[in-house]
Image (spheres, one colour):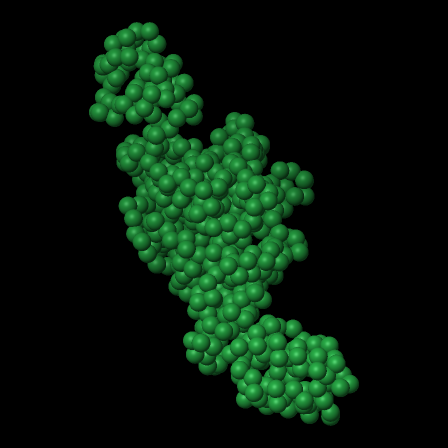
Length: 588
């Protein structure tokens, strides 16, 4: 739809609502979100709280009839409809006391991961998803995936698939989401436009928003003036005080406009009891009338998020601390709707590997989750590592299974300070995981990397490779570099290896050793090593005089798996050929 036509459409939709306000939205609150269990209800559940208001008594309640609703009192007009919730809340002192966070019986905890499909899955987003998933699994809750895909120009299907596959690889399967479905769908914001429109209508009906006709030019001039005068920045609420008839006329004429939320003019400030950062507040003077609907009729991020979190019954919002400013804006929107906000926990930013500012897609290739997939880190090692970026169980334990992470995860142990991306720790952790895997699993994991190079390896060779390199690799993809010499006969020799090869006497000892190898059983590594030791003793030289030039000839390197394991990997015929080539190099 052309922009002008869309403006007319929205004006036609909202004008009657502005001129003739309709009654407040009567849509019932979805399901049973976080209903408090008062003492009366606990009687049938357990005895942790004693019932203060017994049916028909007058000892605790101060309602018109001085009896509790569970016994038919509180005026006799309250309908509890079998819910067992005392409607005398606020009048029955002991019922009110029970609302002070003593005990809540609710639907399961619900958390969500809400990425925008505009690029690859950021490692910080992966950690956010993990923390949400861990909390949901620990508390027996629900992990929701929601796509925030309203930016049509930047969203791509490829990015969407990258997010799906990244979560699959991490083992963070959503309980509800675009692929799984669920009772609160659709789970993509691009499919929820009618819901947002409906809720904007509700805010207009309440008189909680107003159209703002200020142009970009006027807003830019206002900001420049405020900066020049060193005044507080923000909108000056010019359009909030326009005459209603003037507003109606402009809307009818299709004058471009946004919709702004009416922030309380006498606000003392906003406070968040953040589960990671503690008490966070913003002064009343810093609260402005934020835009909720853009001039093109599209709701802004903060409105869509609040509507979605409310309708999807999200109880806890765990996200990066860079959303803290948005949270204060969202609190205003919750207040405007009269909705209870969720519990917030703002996770620490992940900094660059050297601690040099926020981990950025533009500056740090390490920010992409797919990089770790491509290198071949074991999934469980990466999950373990991600959990430790900003969270600690006890300050000492670092290697943990997924079950141990679930059992021990707590927001109380999440740090508020930024956390450096510890790539060195990932290599260490991954190595620990690989060393403790069955050899057959290592063989299976390195196979695709071997095949990606066009190398051919049957199952016996794969198992031998896995056994030889398992103690050395930190990611399965390391096998490509570390084992290239096994497959490539023309690989260039390392300078240090060439130096070992050219050492005086090296060529002679290699030449003398060839007959020994011709008679050796390459499958019996221990026997080969014993015969090599005997060979050196017979010649009156140390073992190093043989093994250093021998390794240099066969592997063209100075380090690697055990030398005789290397000989077994290459095979007798190729070993003899490489030794002879090494002798030529040594004497050239």
